[in-house]
Figure 1 (cartoon, rainbow over the protein chains, first blue to last red):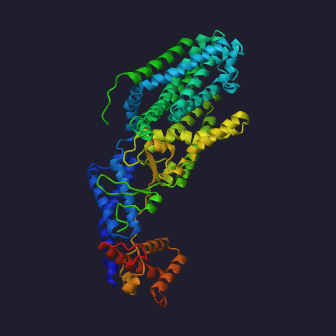
Figure 2: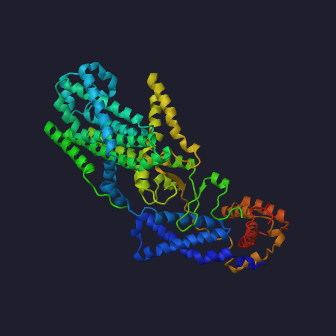
Length: 334
Length: 294
């Protein structure tokens, strides 16, 4: 009877195999911490063997051992190894590089119809806002929040408006604070334009129109005081990047919305899933563009006062983005 | 055979266990993360972000840049970067988890496959905006009163659907998970604990030898009780050990001898029971619990 404890098969099994498990665990630890650079060549060759051996240990343990701690340990070890071996092999900075070199521009390129539609809606909004406010300044107050306009209303004097364009002022309602506010507002608008897309893209269209309206109204206030050329420079230095980013986010939202509204042979859910990844890549890029726009807005606009230079920067940014997205690009096999 | 390998009972599925079959044909059986630990992880992450921002604000304040506005802009940009990329970058990493998730031992995984694509991570975190930050914004809008207040109220109700979404589907998916094809699973890292059936030292063996259980005594329990006994032995709570030892003695009719230690008795019984049940398993019989008479 007493020999029973000594001859427990599960115990002998564990004693024979546990060295392999320990080795697997230490290797996983190093991979998770430092990627494959933490391993020697020899160890990398060993990895698949260790993995299969761990998996087979798990099968055996499940079938023969009633030691919960062993089974739980092997389950977690195998799962970790599975994610390492079959998961993404690329290192984080390679993934980031791939994103900029390939994934993002290709995602935008292949969604050009949505980009065109979203840009159209956005521009239409601006045009309507501009025309309405130019003809009747009272319209301004229905598009623009007083707080957001911070004094830039049709009632403001020309000097005041001119000051806000070139102002270096750091006192109340300073340009920087306003820029920062605009910036976080615009990034929220773009994320919303994307995220609300799945409601058949209707909220996205509404959001784009509404934001177009307020920008158009805003421009009209300045042209009304013969500051059209100057406000153009003020807006374009960062606006070409920022407004383009909003249009792209809208395109992402429309893409998802279209997929939900017209699923074709798929279920609506599947159809949305099939487009969601591409749309998400576009949005990931939009966030980067917003950041670039924020830099231009925060630093460039304060430091550069010349209208032509402002136009020049804005124009070259726009050219850059257009070339970056729409130059023919070979899709790499991933 | 009711619980063969690769088969999940409805109860297990309800508890959040899911199949995950590797290309080698082994069912790893992952477990979904509890909604509670996900909320906890998110709260931790928010805390880390806030601490970083406060530290940055102090640092920027003490650096005395040429004007305050510049410092403010840098701060806004930093906040933007953190909010946009904190979750994404960490989840793209090899452990597929933010620091908060790592602490609570959970991770993001693609549903049904190993490769978690960058696009999925972007998508699930972009939808966090309507799942969390948007309702939060509306919450602050309610106080303003008037029509805006009512609009905010309605919008909040609508957004709450997103907020509470994980509670109302069986895979505990956020809307972001649903769209991105991901879910959040437990990624425990248990240590390999010592086998409770260690009799390496000769004096232990001699002690174990004193416990000679009859087959009838060993057959009193099944696998479920064995596992409970294992937990009790590992937890090493003196009172519980004593209580359990006494109950087992009463059940199997074991007479307590003077000086007999509870721990030794339980370990000896554990070893005997496990040996018995495991040899039955080799013959294809898994005796579920004490009511299972096989």
